Length: 163
Image 1 (cartoon, helix red, strand yellow):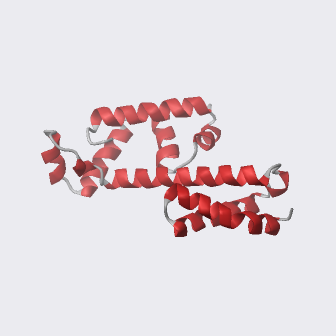
Image 2 (cartoon, helix red, strand yellow; image 1 turned 90 degrees about the horizontal axis):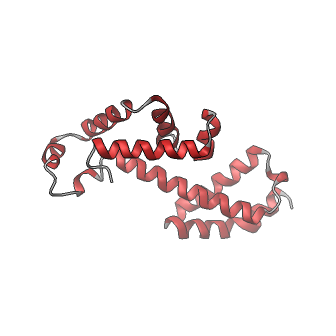
């Protein structure tokens, strides 16, 4: 099949699939279009055995990445901060501006061990997959996962508003 034939055959069903995962059709269309652009630019198209399974897996992964990025942006913007109650730290937190909360979070991140900080930024800030981060940093995927878990644990210990 040519690229155009694959696009015509799968585009609409991939958009519906992505919409079911993220709930917004326009955003789903953007995700699927970006997927096809990446596929076109990567020149991997001809080496893909099963276009259908590859496209659905790639769409699912792109939707997961989008959700992860959105969650991280919401967290960094402090939108989850004010929803907890009953914590003595809450009054102090409510008096802080969004910029102060973000600055406090970055201070915590700066205190991470170097490898942990590097992995955290690749995965959670730059929105790289574990595999991409592992490749970029020259470490195993399991080490990336361990470092991300460690980073979130450190944040939870030092920043009680992290969920």
